[in-house]
Length: 215
Image 1 (cartoon, rainbow, N blue to C red):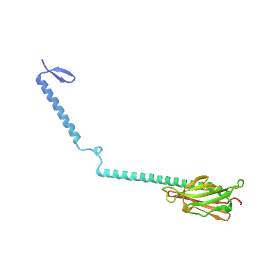
Image 2: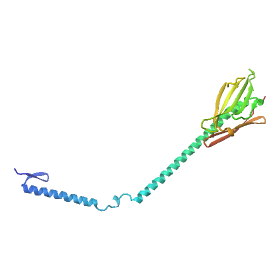
Image 3: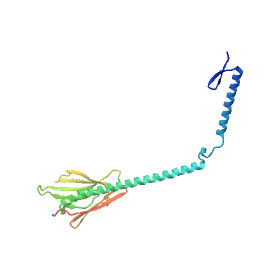
Image 4: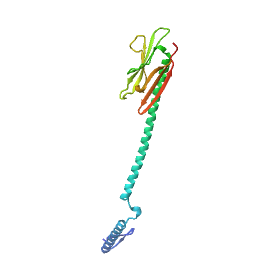
């Protein structure tokens, strides 16, 4: 039987010697082509094939650090502005709450029944007698310490009726009040109360001037 040798896309009959020669030729061509490929890939790199040098890498890292630091600084500044604005708005709201409750209470009190003498906890005492029932009513504005807030306190409003030592009602009028910067005094026929609220680093002070009802 005569062996077959692969030549192009068809099979042809050939002798054993011809088949061997053809195989050697194919192997030579493969080896030569492989060497040519290796020689072309190992040659010197052009500019487009080069990677980053150490200097270029250091510059890139430095630029990245600078940009990151700038973004971080801008972000922190925006957060600080937002926090300060929020704290100030909270302080303003607390001072207004005091005025909302204090103004009508002073107007309702009898002029000779207003006690503005401060104690460590008491800010103001207002008394009046109800005409219909002839029952004495008392309102006491006092400070209550806020946990973890140092000298900052709540301002509470306690309503006493008659001789009862237990308040009929107690409300928290405001929070974040600074007792060292909050006081009331008599000036002529008016009651003047200076109220300061401090939230974080933001402080707001407002003065209320109220005249009680005619005696």
